[in-house]
Image 1 (tube, rainbow, N blue to C red):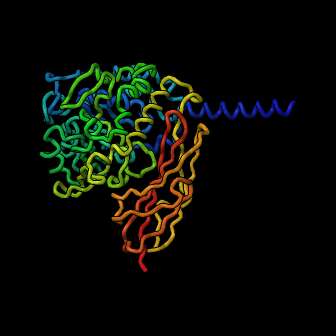
Image 2: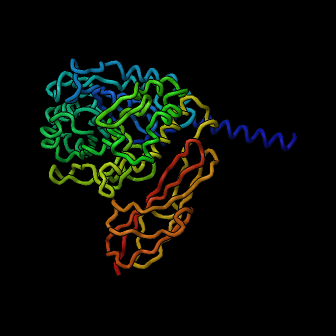
Image 3: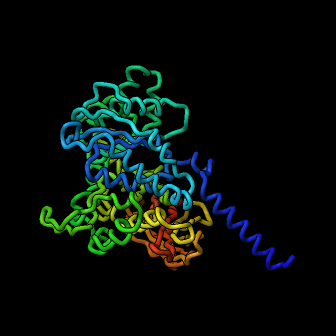
Length: 457
């Protein structure tokens, strides 16, 4: 047998095996994914967020997608109905066979439809009656699977509150377990059930409140991001990467339908509309920033600080450089390009689309160093598409406790270093982010974070 022919055969078998593996769920991988339940009032920005949510459906174990209400929308008042989620899943189904070629873990359309429920929708803050949606949350919080379970409130928290009320009344012996398991991510706080019930009766439940920070990708986004970021939300970018030739789900995205003025800002036909609810699930996309375990670290879903006035387990949006919006918009170019790649996955085969690099550190994430000590930082990036990679090491000052700027040498290489300043005090921390971007189209970015703690003498 000709040796070259054997080589080609072996290469073909390996390639086919790799493609086969990409087409099916990796059980070990999916079992480690965050568990999420999204509750939504069906506002237009919720419907826009749902398009992005479904394109990232492989990143989580989706335990529920639940119709709920808010102070803006309830059944009978500016209500989108109780079928739009299923319609979106039908559009997702048309791209499902393509999507699953690109990453493991995409749920089948029937699996998604099986976790759609109607929650408490009859009025603002209605939590008096049990509903299929609230009972679904109860079942998930009481099950024996590992946690945490991220309860996302795209609208009001009333369906979540009703579930917790059911547990309080009917399963009081499970309250401690549930309090440790549930994490509530709130957008805006859109009814009174969080304040009047959840925070009072469930003070041990962790609450992440994006009460204002979400606004930088909500309706008035033009006023909250710098000009060089805005182009990734304007009509030319949206039409090229999302709205046109990317399958029915992306075409369904409700961008601005015509030129219009809003609060003094001009929005063109095709401009990004609003996704004020997307931070609720972007927080759970694992891009390497460790913000899921540590909300104060910052990541695609924002950065948080404890709100002691509301309780030890309540977090609110923090500021970067004095700007409450920057903890989200500083990542916007990366997460918009990432979304564009997902849109490509809807219509392209694996070899014709881009996929994010994989970044690892060649040392621990947590390092200890003394004042004036040289700290060497080494990362390794691998790209599944064999694209070239660029490296950028930078100090994320706000999550650290050392207040001044450090100088990173060779910040554009895979190996960098810095000298711990002499004025750094014992116990202070310095956060360094390694940002790795490929040369694919669109360029995709992943990260690793190093935390250096200053040791004593």
